[in-house]
Structure formats: C-alpha cells, structure tokens
Image (cartoon, rainbow, N blue to C red; front, side, top):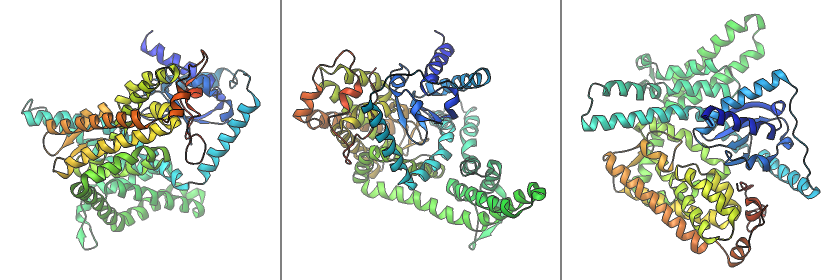
Length: 509
C-alpha cells in the first residue's frame, strides 16, 4: 500500500471511532499525538481505537490525544482533516455503531470521567502550564530542523570542509532563532484570546536592532534582551490592553484606535520595563542552570532525571519549555534536556525487565515489543501508559534508572564536560543529531551514549529485582485468554497513591 493510502486508511479508521466528523470541534497535532477537541467524549469507542495497529495509545486530557508517533502523526493529520471536511459537506455527522456495554462498565466510565474532571478543576496551575506549552509546542519542528542544521554546520566548520557553504548554513540555522520572539508573541496572543499579529508586532520590538539606541534603568538596551520570556510578557500585556480597549472604544473607531493603543501602550511598557526585567530573569535562569550543574552536577542530575517522569504525569514538565528555549537562545543549547532524557532510558530498561519477568503474559509482552522501538527513539507514552504506570512498581524503578542516567550526565557537567541539546522535543537516540557541548562533538556524544546505557542498565536491574512482588508475578504470569487484553492483564495489580489506577493502560495489540 502506498504511504498516502496507508495514512488515509489510518485516518479513515480513526474517524468513526471518535464519534465521526460531527463530534469534532478542532484538530491539531504535536510531535507524536493527534489532538482532538470532542463535543461528546462518551461517543469515543476507546478500546477499538487502541486496538488499531497505528495507534500506540490514547491520553484523555484537555484534548483527546491519539498517540501515533513522530512522522506518522504529521502525515495522518492532514488526511484526517480532509476526511472530516468531506464528511461535513456530504452527510450528517456520523454516530458510532451501537455496542453492548455492561452496567459495571458504564459506572466505571462515569466514575473515571468524574475523577478526571474533578482533578482538572482543582489544578488551575496545570491548565495555565498547558496554555504555555501550547505557545511553544508549535515551534518545536523549526527548533529541531534549525538545530540539526546548526549541528551539521558546526561539524563542517570544525573539520574545515566546504567552507563556502558554512555561512549559508549559519544563516539557515540562525534565522529562526533570531526571530523566535516574534513567533512566541504571535502564539501567545492567539492562545490567550488576543489578535495574534498584534502579539507578534509587540514582541518584534524586542529583536529590533534600533532598541540599542534606547536607555532604560540607566543602561542601553540590547536587541533580543529578555528573549522569549520578554516576548511572552509583552504579548500577554498586549492581549490585556486590547481586551480593555474593546470594552470602551466605539465600534466605528475600533479598527483604528484599538490596534494603535495596543501596540503603543504595550510597546512602551515593553521597552521601558519588560525588556530589562525579562533580561535579568533570563540571565538568572542561565546562571542558575550553569551553577547548579557545575556545583551539584551528579546530585542535581540524579534528582532531575528521577523526577522527570512524575513531572510528565502531573503535567508540570510544561513549565520547563520556556526555560529550555531561554537556554538555547542564550547559550546555543540547553544543558537540562539530555539529563531529563535519561528518564526515557530508565523506562526502556524497565520495560525490558518486565518483558523477561512475565514470560507467560503474552498481552503485556506484545505491548512491550510494539512500543520498545519508539521508546529507544524517545517516544515514551506507549511504555508509560501501557506498561509501567498501570503496574505501579515498574514506574518507580524506571524513575530510578532515569535518576542514575541523569546523575551520570550531571557528573560530567560538574567535571566541565557540558552536554546539551540545540533543540527541544526529541530524546533517546533521536537526540544524537542535536547534541552540542563545550568539548567537541565526539566527547559529547560519548557521554550522552554512556548516560543512556546507565539508564537502561539501572532501570532494568531495579525493575527485574524490585519491580514485582511475589503476588504480582503469580497473578501476571497466569495464562491470558485468547481474548485477553493488555488492559485486563495489567490494570489491577497496583494502584496510584489515591487508590485508583494511575492511568488507563494502552490495550495490547
């Protein structure tokens, strides 16, 4: 089957299982997930959806997220959008095929939806962080592309090869980063309900070369001062000013007065306040990250690597995105990402141990076999949601593996061999093309590779010897029926701290 046909077939298979075109409000995607805003989530046939070969898992969050993996999601999404558009113009919104459910299943679904909703309503900080993530996630493809070009360019420059093309590659790699503040401003205004182009216009002040002629707080401003944090603040201010203007400016004058006042007021505050403040904060972030790893590298790396998976589960990792971007803008790479990427290595090692410890549970072993390749490439959702979290203990031992891998990378940072990434998004083996350090590419790659091995090994050993109780091994190694699923095999043994399952597992395929 041709690639386009395969992607369209995947989209066609997904559409009726999420309630049809009439159940979909918005469609978007990130690096690995198709993100849908659904009108009625009860119409989703989740078990059938998770059973599709192309689907690695699902996440029921503020949007309904279908994990398809990097590359695949970018190709399936346009096909899915086209099918939705066709369905809306040719027929009534689709309804799911009725299927029998028991009273117990309905009660369980209702309780789960209630628990999720209560959790969301109780955590406004998480909702705010999701909005911040929505600003930066669309920028990740450009960060990756420009980061890889920058790495190739650095290699060519160090080797003295193709000197004529090095300036051109420099321009290609640096152009986006020089204007990233504009994109952040645009996305910020869009996310918080303002006019996107006004947010971009105000943020553009930060990178305008002419600000060097302006003095604030007794010193000359520098183009780019404040970086992405300044752009974020400037655009938020622009949204506020614009909304206030709309309350009192007559409709007949709105098109002239509102954008003028928005740009003028927000621009003046940005120049004479935000740029300086954001510049000081950005500098402090960079200085603190360098100090932390220079003075407490192994310990800091151990803590960061060990806590990253729980941060992901709580949604708090999204707060790190602006920090990564600030470090990349300041130093050319973020020293935090390679350390945090070790959490994925611990996850992979733990999954291999689970595979070996459960020789008779074919449903779990099938899930692991299908998810491991993605895990090595840094896509951890299938292993997290399909294996370690529902089991409980292996999630903890995976964190232990990540801690040791992070501690290894942090130790070398402390010794003076900084290991960083020129972009955010990838991890695992996919991070190799984006690695950059202060002691040559060979040294940087070797340290990162050794950190991955440490994470794999410790995650495996910790899980193999401490990831299961005797009762768990007995129950999980019972032969599964022909119709058994991964969910049936792994949902029950252990629960989260609140007494309920930590997450719905990915059904084995």
